Length: 247
Ligand SMILES: *[C@@H]1O[C@H](CO)[C@@H](O)[C@H](O)[C@H]1NC(C)=O
Ligand SMILES: [Cu+2]
Image (tube, rainbow, N blue to C red; front, side, top):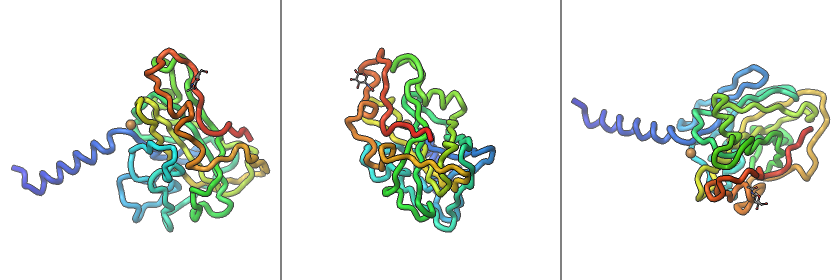
């Protein structure tokens, strides 16, 4: 027989399981072969150590002007638990999501120079540049392969390369999935991690590549406002945000 207390505990566990069953976020990184565990969403930040900034749930942000757009809600530094990964320019970054459920939409990866320690950076004032993007890879809206479908096929991972000419310094790294499988609103899923970049490069993106979050996207952007079910045979998709900076 169940006590009232254990029934409450069971109900709570079921609620938490249903909360984390849908949607998602980056749960770990592999950079040049070294694994870095992400922040554990749904848990208190107290006592956590990670290169990732805090983010609290698998739920999407649905407004391109949401103040949490830089690094998700709440995006805070972990303070004494906040770490940064020291990696060379040109490093390969593999981001690992939970069991990502949505196959329609682009993948975008950004960086921003913290101009000092990322641990104390206010992410809303950072100037971001895109280092990687992929949208509709082949076929049409309804039956084609989207970047997020490829991400699922690759075990919920996405592989990018940090431009090898990028100048050393402290950088925020931002992975973002824009899920567009619902016709009523876009779903943004950003997470950030801190890097200390080494190398002998000296390149920095010029102003035309730099954006702020929020600010980089408008609700009216074709890639944001899109209803893929309205024109299922269409084959064009414009990824929102700035052009990719190649270094
Ligand atoms: C696809 O192309 C049409 C016609 O040029 C354009 O109106 C629309 O905005 C494009 N859609 C996307 C998502 O880029
Ligand atoms: Cu979802």
